[in-house]
Image (cartoon, rainbow, N blue to C red):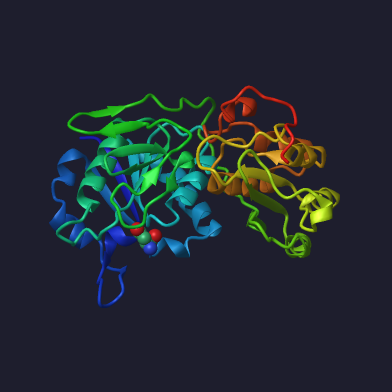
Length: 347
Ligand code: ASP
């Protein structure tokens, strides 16, 4: 029988309670064995309690510990399933993908919208599909949810109260688990399995919005080592100094302080092309880095890792703008879906 490691980290899947009281983490393995005994027909499963938290409590230090644990334990297994709350699942999946380069076995993350102990729970099928994906799916960090397998660092939580909670707007599915379970080959990473668990967590994720006072992020700059800017559309932001809200001084100041600014899009599909409009081109001229079609969560974790491992500015910029584990599309000019036009005027 194949050997599988099942690490529980918490989330709704293993919670108990519910209205009128609040859902909270509960004893999980007893419920798992009584509600989902067929899981143990698929593989010889070793159960481990890593932590038992609502995933809003997840922190970079826990990602590092989780990656270290997986790196150490995986040689003894054919694959791993990590159960996790859905709220920060996409962040943790991104972190694990960057921290485990050269991964040669599936690490499949899953969770659920309703606890395993409930009659209409989605947890049972998600768990069975996740185990199957960890035995037959591609050797990368993925998320299995509602009969779909997503690349972990491409996924977003898009729904709060429906079973198809995840989407991967910029990358095709790695698997569909219908009547037949079908899997894509996925990543075939070169090089040996490594552990890159260090992160610089003094970063900030800033969303541009109409009315954002540029003085606020400017005041923040001395506190941070890096910034992800969720800009509009193709990477746009207010530029015109006469209108009083230009964010260009933020890029200038960040450059002067050697604080990398990674620009990603608020739009879910496609990505930024900083050469397309005036504001993006001005940011590029001030040294902004293109996050291409990365999700904000993948860009944030990648920035944390880039800062921890690359002191040299050029090497850091190259790392951030190059696909490492399938988290971004190779050629940023194609990401926007139109042939690159230079500096189309925004106004
Ligand atoms: N609050 C829960 C968590 O992320 C939500 C879930 O698991 O669906 O832990």
